[in-house]
Length: 198
Image 1 (cartoon, helix red, strand yellow):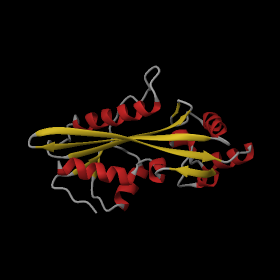
Image 2 (cartoon, one colour):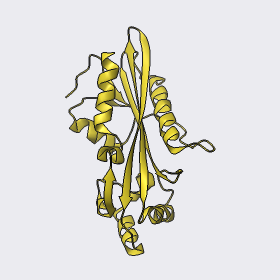
Image 3 (cartoon, helix red, strand yellow):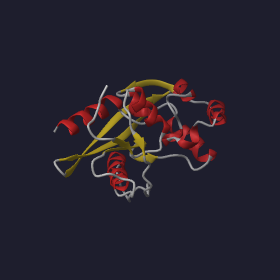
Image 4 (cartoon, helix red, strand yellow):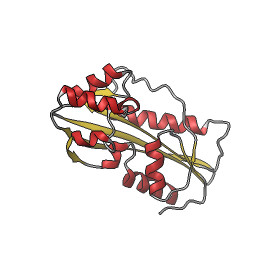
């Protein structure tokens, strides 16, 4: 779909983001950025993912493997329940707690996406935050236990992956589905197009 004069680097180890970008026909290298993802005191969830996407981009560009001509794309996703950030669960009990919080209510999923491009020798970055509202059905404890046994919960923000078995928990989605998976694809492609054509 999109081709670039410069190489594209994804500053994320997320297999979901790789699959989404590959499915859109993009060719890219993967160079995960290792940063401290601890929320700041009182930090709003949308501000949190914005900050982390910027920091991941900066960390990737600071790598000894980085090239001054490459395009860097980074993203971070979190689940927001009344302003509380739900990141990846610490253990099965934490995952159960999160899924119990999500049961029978709506929550928000925010993804911050940052693109950094070299233009005429100057690096310019653009950042967006995309938000999707997700409504879960009422979950019985047995349903949560069943889901935890699938093993899907442990490496996902909010302890669920909508593209997997947890899709059975979702009653309604308002906004981008790919955003809930980990990367708002249409908005990311638009950001890349705009950044590289500026």
